[in-house]
Length: 281
Image 1 (tube, rainbow, N blue to C red):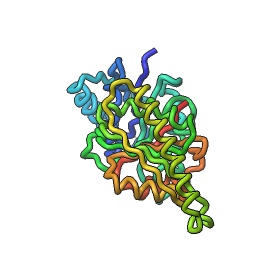
Image 2 (cartoon, rainbow, N blue to C red; image 1 turned 180 degrees about the vertical axis):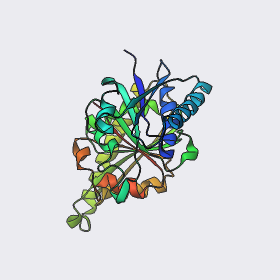
Image 3 (spheres, helix red, strand yellow; image 1 turned 90 degrees about the vertical axis):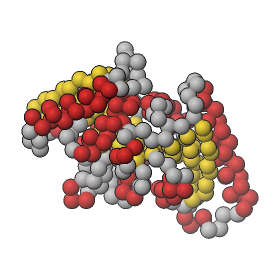
């Protein structure tokens, strides 16, 4: 069965921006199809939704993407309604938006996107768009890695879906040190940790090249010691002029733990570039 892209579309301007990513990612699949899913919750009229989805479909047709719409009435809440429509399984990739929630709750905490990330029905990526002018085509990607092999493997489908636009990938390994010990770490220990990080990133770069075939990506490796993982990612994104940060909602950072002050939430709030939070089945 062919892999499929599904856009959970709420009709907002942010969802319009995310749709550009959905179209670009759909173009990397052989079927070149995009399913646009919307739940009529009363926030927008049916006529307005039809017009907005038609605009996305028109944009898709210009680049050879066939768009299909699934507009359903609300049954229960929006989240449970979406679960009835989104095709489940490993071949489905659902895109949704990450934007500030009402009353300052956060970009993911308590949102439908957060619930989709932890639903386990399909692969999900929640995207916060900071630079809509990119049109879903980031050229420079910052890919922080925590050192877990599964974390890298689960990211591969999402990396491949960005292959059409990305030409430089910055692999980042933040070697975290307990804040109480960070100021007193010896030069020998620091050097050993840095070397360990570079060796790990070297293996990952080789594996990505092997699994992505002839994709002409340029890889840069960066290893830093820090007592603040989230802060360091934001610093490196600025230094490297990254257009997008790709982060995994892994076992180490369970989506149901998203809340104000959570490290991923900190990145979403303070980022100066687009951010994608992914989770694979």
